[in-house]
Image (cartoon, rainbow, N blue to C red; front, side, top):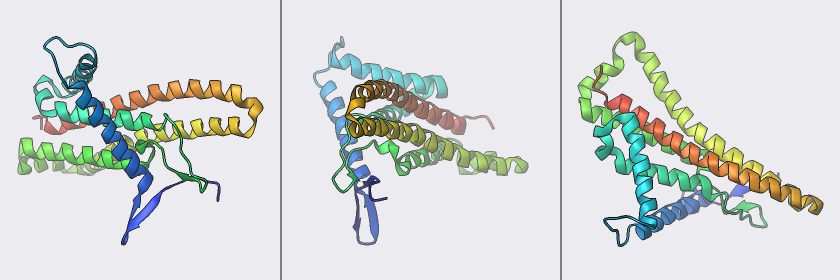
Length: 238
């Protein structure tokens, strides 16, 4: 038990915080802000270089919104989709860069999305926002009428909200957490037996490449499902 890694936990009064996740989340936001700020400086009518990359990401996330919510919703959800995608993309991959563990087995570097609290919070945010926009578009009375009618479908509607929340958050967490755990095992294999270092190194490189692919795919899936849920709630169909 003493050799198991744990996060840096601290408290302010009766409230406890996961310092590792907090630091990595702040670092993720700082990286995104820095890259976007850098790429958006001195923008030109004919994009090139860093501006091309930034505009590709914007077009990509706009495409997700357009294909799932309709072209008319791009202007409403463009920024939301871009921020959500870039945050999850960086959060998924930042833990693959390195691994920092203190002699006391306190982990100081990990992907924020390798923590269920982060992914479930993101999922809850999506569910709450989708319902909020549904109420905003249809009106409170009309939205409730659509949710609770027919009456026999009400339990299924409630279960659907709950399962959407669980699957959205747990899918992201499971994929990222599993990737980092296996990467840690491969690193440990090389550290425990020097003769296995070449094999461990090859496996690490292969698994890291695969993990990057999975991390990017999961960011895409999360944003796509988010826009599907949004579209379902704001649709004018009863």
